[in-house]
Image (cartoon, rainbow, N blue to C red; front, side, top):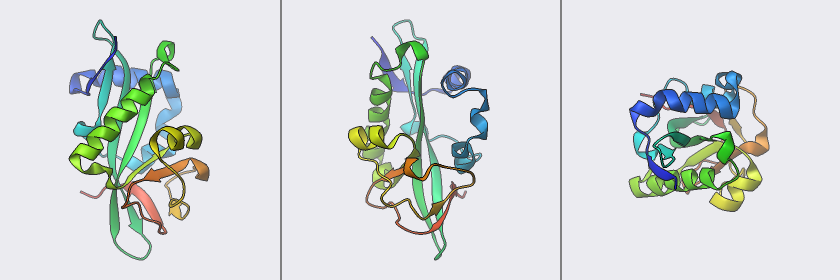
Length: 168
């Protein structure tokens, strides 16, 4: 049985190895890394999946980001992901369980007002209600396939602006 638990700091090295397995060694050059910048993951929204022996087999982290609106002002949001699952357990629903844990925690802590991610639109729309409806005028600090820029929540801005790490 796989347990979903809060992501503790001692799993840091294992998470990095898992992310390398899931996304490859060039993952740090992806636009998502530039969006979240040097911010720290939000502990209350980050989880680990542990197998029966206590080994990390999956993780999800969420990050503070914001949209700097062209018209002025900043809209705080939470960037969901990356979600990573060890290759041997992919397609077994573990990623969905990790997402559900993060989204439930976001709802409990009030972080669910404006969530965004870069991911498969069919999957994230079907299971979690994300869409690209309000993200069409957002700019990012790197390339992105527009249909993969997704968001959900009542405070998601339908506005032109630059997406990046949350200000201190």
